[in-house]
Amino acid sequence: MTLASAPGKVILFGEHAVVSGIPALGCSVDLRARVIVEDLPGRTEVETNLPLAGFTLDLLAGQIRSHEALHAARYVSAVLEELGANDLRIKVDSDIPPGAGLGSSAAIVVATLAALSEHLGLGLPRAEIGEMAHRIEKSVQKGLGSPMDTALATFGGYLQVSSRVQELNLSPLALVIGHTGISHDTRAEVEKVQSLRARHPDLVDPIFEAIGLIAESAAYLIKELRLAELGELMNINHGLLEALGVSSRELSELIYAARGAGGALGAKLTGAGGGGCIIALPGPAGATALEIALRQAGGRVFHARTGGEGVRLGA
Ligand code: PMV
Image 1 (cartoon, rainbow, N blue to C red):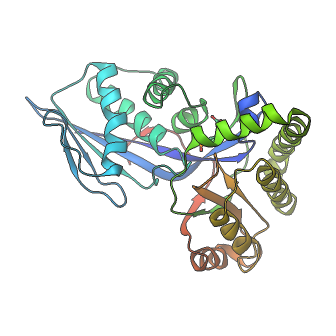
Image 2: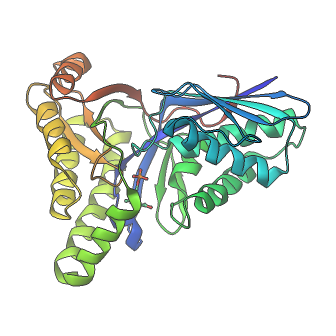
């Protein structure tokens, strides 16, 4: 039996502008997906224990009994196919809610690759796991997907992503994540923003440039732990994402709860928007005040420490 795990991620600054080549800043969070591989002569099975799920999927019988199981199984079977592996039971267990912009699928793909590499004695180097994971995620998502999620699941830490991926050595942050409970559709949100840009390039391009300036200044503020200024940049970035049309009533309610009763230094949506999550930086009232405020506004809450370890053998 072999166990590997990989982290989820948040985009701190720069979503949507990154699609047009502007640098975005993302980091790993300490919510992890764990994958166990064991021998199962004559059959191949994927078993999930995801939040809201907990069903078994028999790939040969083709039985799929929940959306969450389908999500995990689709990515696990793409990995099995890529490596030509069978006669195995793969158990997936994850802290990362799917469809929320927190890198659930990338963490599952990366952890599955690492567990299989060890179990089958393939000795895949980390960089190769990252590249394969990006290719597999892109093929399952039909062409979509920047290398941000798979690179963060593989290497952890902080990454600046534009046409290339650069590792940054920054301090960890304690963030509170508020999930609207609504799955988001990254492709639809990206198309919406790109179509707005095609219709109003003179307005949208300066917004993208301002987002890029924020992502660049934020790295220094994180390194120096200048949190009040960092919170201000989160609020400005959120305002610009509002202008691009990717916020929603549910996201705004969580944002205002975080900044109001929650006493956050700053809050913004993270990822594609339209649903999914917000991130908030706790203020003097602390993470518990934020948690209470977000729950009262109808959010699911996750506490996350940023910039932790990437894929590893073990939980
Ligand atoms: O929703 P997520 O976390 O998959 O992030 C999407 C980020 C975008 O910038 C909107 C798209 C992309 O591929 O970078």
